[in-house]
Image (cartoon, rainbow, N blue to C red; front, top):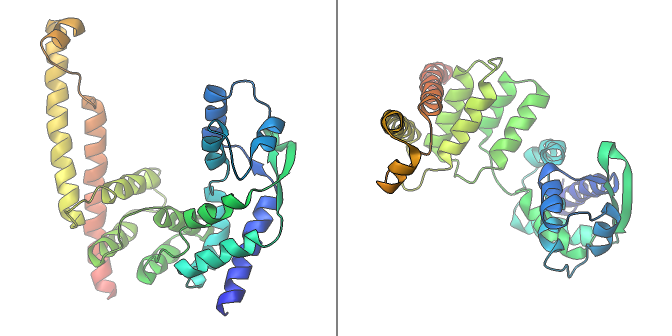
Length: 281
């Protein structure tokens, strides 16, 4: 498939998604409730333009932000084709090439107002799809081998939405996790989200195993600090402690213990998966 064909196909998929209508997610609804109380969907549609006012501009960003349902729909195509930053520009240009109308859907999917999508929407919308981000094939193949297609696609979308680099140590760490963690475990996705958040905090430290150990140590200290605060609170009151310069901890004893237990579990899964991974090589 040449460049024009693959970009045209992706643009058609995006166009079809828009034409089906856009449901307001909880973030958009919360913004409307907080900043635009009483505004109707019809008025929102009328105010979405290429030059939105200061009130509607943040809502416009929330409305035209790709959701995971669309990303899961596009992921098989993105995975099978090699898109780059030039392709992002071409897809946006194809979407801008002819008028595209959509509608905002009200509660329970009821049709709201129909309007033409502002041209300024398309470039940032395509950029947020991160179609040029490369997920290493050994990682995607491992996920596909372990999980059914619908689950595998959702996991790949979560990986696509991350910002850390898929270095060799990170890729091996993730492969080991997927191979060592039971995919049927009720806490699988909770642990996965914890791993992705951990890798997103890399900074200058790029060894995932060291990051895991460092996070556990940090949480252990936070747990001790929380226990000390609870002890101080039993002997005094909050106002007195605040006057003494004692501040409440950011995490509770139970919250820290829960995260430590999950990180320990992740560590064991990665260790097991690492053994299985090496045997496979």
